[in-house]
Image 1 (cartoon, rainbow, N blue to C red):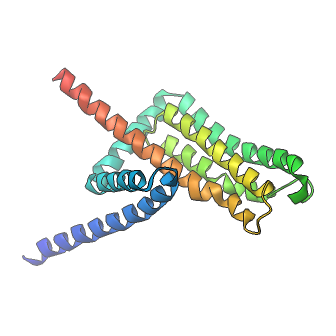
Image 2 (spheres, rainbow, N blue to C red):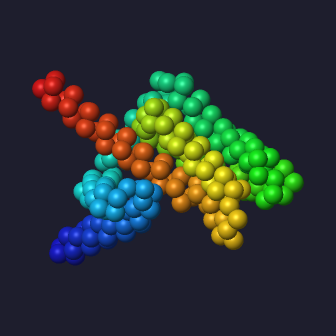
Image 3 (cartoon, rainbow, N blue to C red):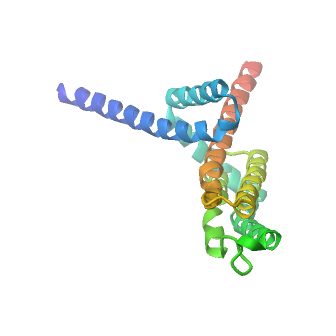
Length: 208
């Protein structure tokens, strides 16, 4: 009779610890992404996001996201179209940027490429994640479009950093889509979700 509650308590503790670990990993990524801010502002913003993520009940949140996404997919044809455009346009843009910067900085190009089409398709991973979130969650289309613009800038800056630098570590710039692009997508999703939840609560109070 007493083992069931203990087992349930242990499960809740394990889930909470897993949540904390995931949040800490994401917090490290967010802290690095927001490194352009003053240290105190970077730390404060990261701590605020981490605290909100820990306090948020994940299971009901993801259930609502999936249900809303299912409804949106059936009621809005532009949503799957935008997701497809992101998934296809991401690697196309990356390949095009690679070709352009290779022409702009031929000293470090191998043939017509700085990184190569295979690497370009791989580093378009943030675009794939963004398309997946657009289909599987209630991420708004304006937020997805804003994130896509940011990803385009990060991709271009990474290629420019590699092509314009004489440093022996310049190749690290090619990892910019992973170091900054993926955290950007997750950060935009979290901010968009927070705005949607806040707007829903405000609308509910006004109706009440």
